[in-house]
Length: 386
Ligand SMILES: *Cc1c(COP(=O)(O)O)cnc(C)c1O
Image (cartoon, rainbow, N blue to C red; front, side, top):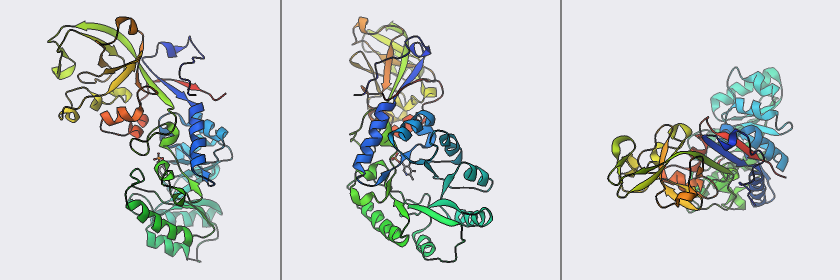
């Protein structure tokens, strides 16, 4: 079971931190194993771009490696260099490929560039004819129009025998744009195009599915799956979260104040109190990635009358009221017994009691964006697998 409540260091800064993050690496490892199970007989990578979705590439990378992952995807080369110390013999793919000036970085750290345009491909051909053999991967566009060789160029490349001797692709991949919508017929369209690509590059491994694609079924798995968000306990398919929560974000209550009926709250006085109220002021704001669009009122996303985000404390869900500010957010705790909330307590912003994706939805965004935008002020605590 996920154990967010055991505190191995009861006297550290963690107890008084303005904002703090608990990352359950045991749950993270379980999630990787679960995605591996769902990937059937094919290998399962771990996507650790953007500092492992904001949770720390060193600790998360180590946990995946110890769970058995030997294929990793990062976005940019520098992330691969960091990861290399924690995943010594793993294959590390760099999704944005390689650019002139980075050759040494790729060779020294044994990074595999994912070549995604004709320009990069031409550059890579010149690199390997000069420096010799080094593995690369190829991304092929099957409808995303983000990165990737065109379908036609990829098929031409597969049949081209005049490539330099050191050109040795080890993986061909593509990316689904609508995997989060299992009912979309566009998934099958991309699948069918990619099946042709995969067949053309016979003898080379292929990979199509990120978290959401894994749930589309075995046809979508090919040789290697590439889950990211699911490993971190986020929803890849809206409303479906079969995995364990990994992260808990909390903010400290720095003041509990009484406020008279008729008074207003926060910038712009956009919230007027309809009753005598008790307010908890917590030390987290949009500088901590607790987005301004989570405000209870006074932001464009709330003009339709929808409520803002909720926090969680001592068994109660408490609403954000008024605008979230840079460093502070105000929660209405009138309905919480006074003994259940005191200065120095923590309100859970998201975590096991307040699902990440529910909070993201209140801001009009996705869990991915909340995680990767967490900001620098969090005191972090990692729970290690036993
Ligand atoms: C980010 C990314 C992934 C992982 O996606 P999730 O939705 O987080 O599982 C996989 N493949 C590529 C190419 C990506 O950019």
